[in-house]
Every structure is written in C-alpha cells, then in structure tokens.
Length: 115
Length: 113
Image (tube, rainbow over all chains, first blue to last red):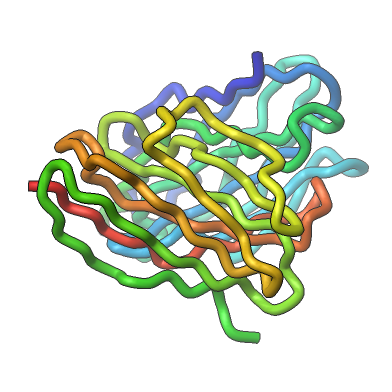
C-alpha cells in the first residue's frame, strides 16, 4: 500500500535558524515526491517536486528537499527560517505506474517560526 | 493564467440535504482531483477525473460522487449529508501526466448542521 508519513505534527523554530520538516514514504515502484504549503483559509500551494535526477531539489521561497532512496525519505529544509514561513506543510507521493495521478498526502506538519 | 476556481466558497447545509460543489481548472488542465480536508483526518483523496472519466477513486461511500464536463470543469455531489461531512473540500488540477504537480483551488468550506 502507498503511504506518506509526516512524523511531527508541529515543528517550532526561531527565525533565522535552519528548519527541517520530515517526510517518509512507502510506495510500490518509483516515487514522484512533492511538497505543498497551506496558509490559513487557503488551498495548497506547490513548493517543489522530485521526479528524477539530482537528489537535492530546490523550490519556491528558498526551500529545498533531499530525496534519500535508501531511507525512503524526502525531508523539507530551509537554511534560515522566516516568520512568514509559518504554515501547514504537506508531503505527497505518486507511485509511478500505479493508480495513475493518485496523490497520497501526509497528515501535515504545522511549522511555527517565532521571532 | 487564471488559477483554479471553486464555487461556492462557503456553504451551510442541514443533515439529509444534498450539495453540489464546482471546480473550474486552469486552462489546459484535463485532470481534476477532489480532496476532503478535516483537522483530524488530514487530506483524504476522493476521486480524480480525466477527460470526463473517473480514473481514480478513494475510499468514500457512494454518497460522494462526481463528474467532469467536456470543458474539464468538474462537480462533486454529496447526498444525504451527515454531520461528519463538514470539511474543507479542495479541488486540484493538473495537465494529466503523473510528473505534474497539482494546482489547488481555495476550497469550499462545507458546514453541516
């Protein structure tokens, strides 16, 4: 069965510090991996994706994520957090060749960046 | 390009009623997916339509149904509403290839009283 796990419901960091939001996945076949961000009362916004190639993917707003096949992880990172990064973050996976275009989302991680 | 639009943005219904939600995709996007978002359950996949055909389906009861029109606009219908159907319903669209990211609409907030 395909699944995505975000082990932390909430992550707290101070502004200017690096941040990491964790994501692990379980899929049959090769994964396509995505990160989305949701601000209050808004839909989800795309941040970045891993399809193939370089394991380090750079995305919007200074975010990046590292694909680790052996650990089946796709953690979201940013070198220096901003208060405006405070939001709900979702990791998602598609299993290539299985259930075409069916996204599996993690439960979400609330990021709190304090001044 | 205009983004994904969803109507209405807010809806209040009572138990037993039915409701229809609408989603207009970004021009050129042929795939439309629907999700239910609740605080306790996160984002749950309902179904996906591509070229007017349901291509994927989540684990929701038959009270939840959808359709897609030739212009790719999609509607979602929930019949015999229950209190537990109160949620944010999100529509997401993409071109249809599996390596494409989905673009989300702002959602429809449904409250069932």
